[in-house]
Image 1 (spheres, rainbow, N blue to C red):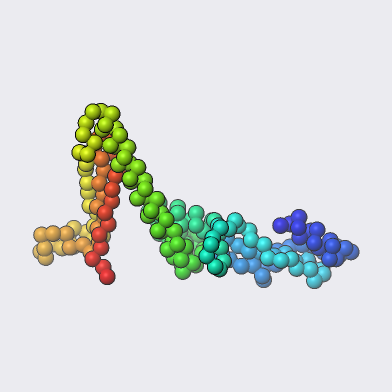
Image 2 (image 1 turned 90 degrees about the vertical axis):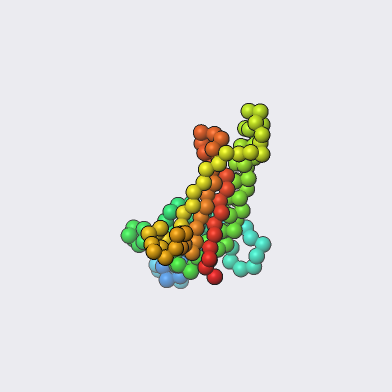
Length: 194
């Protein structure tokens, strides 16, 4: 960017000895990425806008997503912190945080892809267990498992109301019990919310 700006400024104003600096009045925030331009402190030179991020190729109309924004959402999908927590970390570090709506839009865009890849990975784990059982000379269709369920509300919240867990949401996880790794081979989320 700077090489192009210096050359262009020299061509437009060859006798100007002004300093080239960021034009903060023109900057645009795009999630965690920025678009910037430069200006001269003495003459009227102002550069075009430059993306300070890499874009992701897309066949859809409209502005292309920044790789950093998609990468951030992939990271947040694989950690226990949320969008709100990430924004708090940014603000505590004096970094302008992305907007909540922008982060939600990006999360919606990649959540389907993350889910598809997770399902493919679980399928690969199941196929791996079947291959191991075949090598051992065991029936590959019978797999020893262990499982557990996590509910969205505490068990004690239903005391005296029902003998069953009064949750509106739960996540059921199944892990194989054939190898020492005990890899997760399936998950099942359930929700009663409309």
